[in-house]
Length: 419
Image 1 (cartoon, helix red, strand yellow):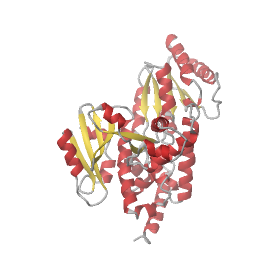
Image 2 (spheres, one colour):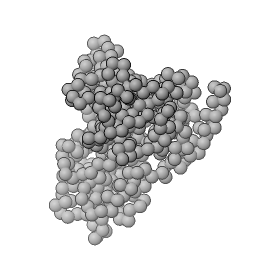
Image 3 (tube, one colour):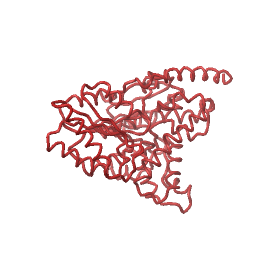
Image 4 (tube, helix red, strand yellow):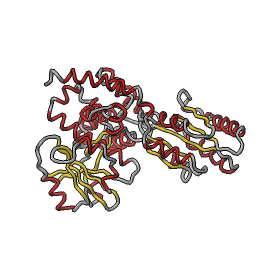
């Protein structure tokens, strides 16, 4: 079978390439949200926040093609990080253009706003001026660094904005845009720009490295965050992604670099990587908050492409190794779930007591859902049964063998599990 797989894979890659020529026209769910809010009277700035390469700029351009009022759309690319006048200059241009269209709304869009130091301070001054003078200028800002976006919003812009979170692409979106089968989604993940490259593993890896990992680290994490130990930060990223779907003690991360850091530093770096949309650290589920905070974390990437990048194996090799494929399989479920936690309404945990475990625990308000992932034909659910007996969850599911098929589960919005 493994002599036939490469031929089948090559044909699928060519099909993905043809589909990829049209993905730019696909509209994500956030399109309708943003368009609807821009058609309302001016109330709040709209903040489009999400990791790199998930389609924020594309979505803005799609919305601009639908609105009926004039706009100015600009990007901070190429603007100096310390430029103190750039935002004021763009706002002045927007006001001048708005004056030419009396009695009509005007839209100002600024892409990758976090590239300007202290951006929120300058935006606040301009936005408040428009409000005080009753100027009908609506504002959309986008940003790739959740750290810098959330920091700026909390510092200066309270009460002036609404956030639209842009998560990584789901399996359903990748399947609709590229015809990607679930097995390829498990390995290659949900970066639409990388999908047409999967036939050339070297090119695909280079894209993930340069456009995702390095771009996020250099332009989102390191640019405005004090990092005393860059080697430990990079090692934390490498180990955390390689262990996605598994527990990983902070001490083990530090132990990989003798005398290069401390447990508290590594823990802070994990938090930073999670806020940057790369990899999160899940706490063990417990009623006792102190026990949750002190538990060994379970690593979870936001996109399985990152997990596969650090395997250093090809898709064909990975799918032929049962243990590794099982890890990727479970990690793909976790990636689907963790992207639903961005709006803070849903929390994600894992659970373990000695040899008993449940892969993922979701909590929303008083509702708790337990999810066990089975990539093989073993139907054993001892851990799930123990969790039910102890915590009486609202619902419980098995995903994979003997349960909900993986492609079906990955096509379901996580919020629908609580219905």
